Structures are given as structure tokens and as C-alpha cells.
Image (cartoon, rainbow, N blue to C red):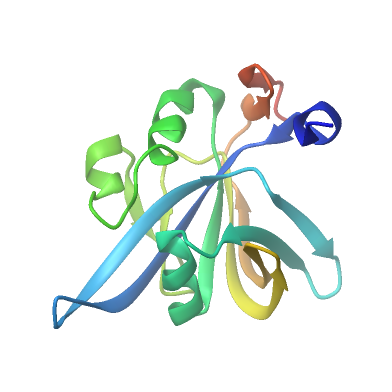
Length: 166
């Protein structure tokens, strides 16, 4: 059975991350955006949010090194930019520059967030759980803000769809 037959549609988000890494022997501050639909709240008290990240992904290393990530809930009208961020690697491309999304600083963690987001969660990693070829990063929500209402993006087996934002 195809998992998408059972577990989808799922809300699509953009996760932002940042860390200082070695690139060809030189320390470089790298920022990245990646598209994700495997995420969920896991606790109200304390407020915890989880994301599942493939171990081979560039952002996996950034989050592991920095211990922070930002969940950005994006409006449906930016679905093409969201799709772009999921189609190339941040190892070789600056997704902020190439997608046209606006980088702004998080308030409570050292990480960028996306200005165009409907809402965001600034998270500090409290736990990592090995899950096959993925790692589940559980983050304590250090700051959360709903910026505006809007239609959100969902992934179905047919592609991206929308639903009215709450």
C-alpha cells in the first residue's frame, strides 16, 4: 500500500536552518530552506514541535550542528516557491536568493525565518530520535507568531492542494 493513500493530504511547510560549517577548509555561515510535510505538535506543556528530516539532507547537518530550526507555515499563493525549495539542495544554491523569499531574523533563536510566512515557530532542539533513514528533531517552541490568515498548502498524491487557513 502506498503511504500517500493513507496518510495524505499533509500540510506542507518550509523549515529554515543556519549553522557555521566548513566548506573546503573555510568556515562559512550557511542558511537553508527546505520543504517538509512530516511534522507535528507533540506537547502543549511544554510546547514542543517535531519535524522528521532525512539524514542525507543538507539541513539535517545544519540543525544537528546549530540545535535550532524555524517552522514557516506558507500561503498557498507561494506554492511554486515552496516547490522550488524542495527541488534543489542548499549545498549548492542559496535558496533565499533564488526563490525570492525574504529572509528575516528570528527573535529568540539564531536562525532565519521567512517574512512571507502566515505563521512561524522558532524551535530549540531538545531531543533527537533515530527513525530509520530519518531523524525526528523535537524542538521546544521558543517563540510562536501568527502573522496573518490565508490558505495553506497541502500535499496530496496528485500534488499541492489548498484549504482555507484557520
